[in-house]
Length: 426
RNA sequence: GGAGAGGUGGCUGAGCGGCCUAAAGCGGCGGUCUUGAAAACCGUUGGGGCGCAAGUCCCCGGGGGUUCGAAUCCCUCCCUCUCCGCCA
Image (cartoon, rainbow, N blue to C red; front, side):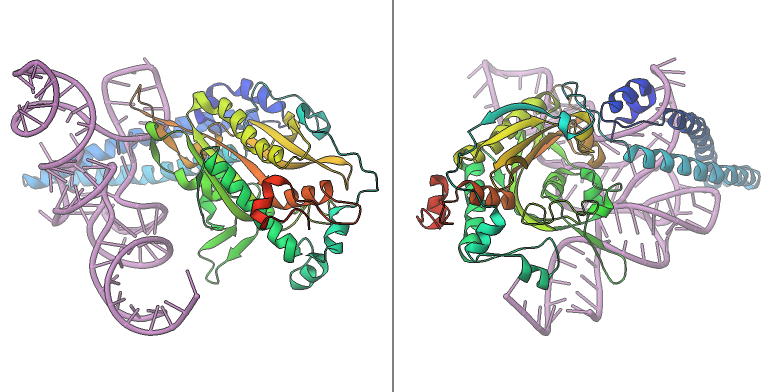
């Protein structure tokens, strides 16, 4: 959510900055509602003050045994008008809040202008795509040949966009997870957390998935229709919400968390996209990095968090590039995002394997997550960041395709061998 | 699933429907004293909205209701704890 104060005082500037991501803000509507809000709120509070005074007077009069009849009737009349005003104020505030919750974050000044993903800007590259002396296969063929990746049986059990991994590939996926968690906890200073995979609506509102993107989520509805849970689309949701409603001691900052969780996405609107293989699934594993930092530190933190995610690819010796997302490609809550794209020989292109974002105070304002500024003694909003470190399913795909041998065996990179019982190829 | 007890400020914990503008203690911060510290004593100490300000409004788990007036009464939901049952 944007700062309501800015939304009131600096609307034209906000409109311009949102235009960078192709979002057009309804300035007229906001101005109209805001004008109404102010008038009604001032009057409501004036009446409330009046009522409070009179009610207090009744209390005193009763205590001293005086007659209260006339006082009572004036206050009763006041109450009637107040009820109407309060209802109207509530409606206006609800309308404003609905509007505000649907406005995306302001892009950082360094975000490239652009109309679509083609306008993303490559920042740097690591490694060279391998030159094959045989036609490289994709992960579907490779996994099938190993008899360890089965989409048909997954379709029988569940449906499209699911996979069953068996034997060496199931083990490899577990090895990847273990390797990533160890790297981030022992070398990058993250604290490992285990979190719920089912979350409530409030948490999803905090990180920005609700109310606008409910169709992307899987929801579980309790029979009574009361307690609704959602399957997490990313560990970002439960992990960032650890600080919802809290005021954090500045001495504890930055908070750096890493979590491995499955992720569940409906993939509504992506029909026909990546229908084959493990690239786009309803359920996939991910290791997620989350940081909560002071506003001054958040852009340095974005660089270091991105570097932490890159380190995984470097240790696995996978060629990748880093791109800065342009305004049009930026996620709803993000102020700035770097995507990490790994080289996939099976597709002959770079594909997203991690997305690292600084949300500034957009999420923390929604969830009221603050720290106490030692200089002022006052609570201020934290900045939140997160990034995949990495998407595990896509890492598995990248390993298969990049480390395949002509006979269909897969070489295991050195960094992973100790997690595979010393095996060098499968 | 059954039976019961509770949710009050950073923590503990009071609070007959009307100076609750929430007691008190602990903790925190500032000061006095001290070579320094401790102890003692004094003071101070929640969050949010509107407003240039004076000020004013809201928040006692969430929501709704009764009332001139609700932390206090009623309804409902959520959460915590105890006992029983079941169970990874």
